[in-house]
Length: 112
Image 1 (cartoon, rainbow, N blue to C red):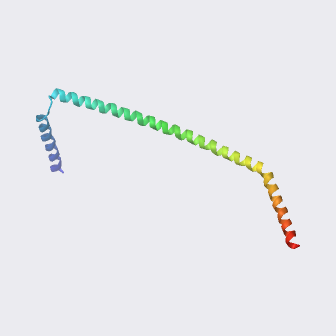
Image 2: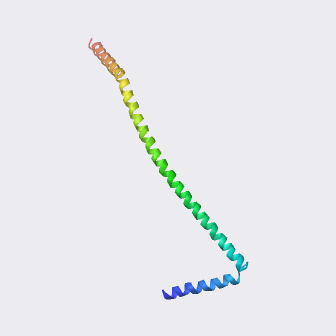
């Protein structure tokens, strides 16, 4: 493990020197570019964090509204079904009566 750590440190130092020697800009310009880059990264990170917070709030709001709408819809369906059963009950009884009457007529016709 010591050899690995020494290798990483040595590589980092050599890479840094190489970068400094072959840098296309002066140190002042490079520092300004790095500072600007990190400032932009920080602003982007803050924007992403804000967007995620807004998304989380929107999902929570949608979930709450969706559940409320689903409950209201289920209650409305239940009410409509109960009303339909109440309204159709006399008609169903009438149809059953007519079927019974037809069956008895058919039975008397086949007997004769």
